[in-house]
Length: 167
Image (cartoon, rainbow, N blue to C red; front, side, top):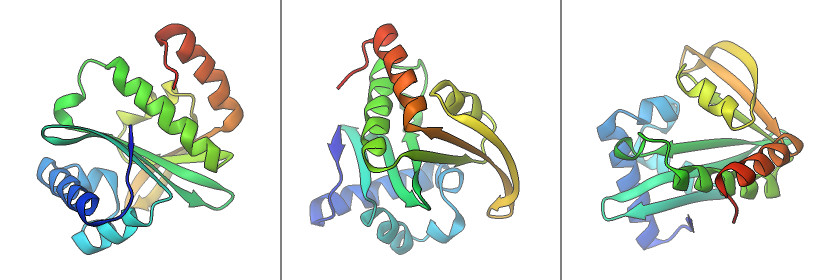
């Protein structure tokens, strides 16, 4: 797990991630239209308090981020399409450790998605489903979920017991 820090070399990798998101059709699934232009995307993620990633020869394979949101934070995660199948233990370990880092910053995390298929996966991580909010995601409805630090601690113990996921 690597930490993104703004600077010339890593900014190039951030541009490459944006390009990959746009090419694969994930940009519109992941962020609102105000972040589709490259300059807006770069400004947004370059100011991110927590942006973590892993790489291979083709670029970033998995990315997680957290931003402040009211008294807590928002948390997001992306896995490159060719890495998504199979529920890899390394991905679970990455997500658990990213959540651990996010909870070092915030006592509660909110997750929003317009993708129905993402909801049960997010709930499996320990999030509680709040509901579907109309028009929230560029005029489309979005699902809203949350997880507290205490909920995370319960699930992290379970993950460690079942999968050996620890730092």
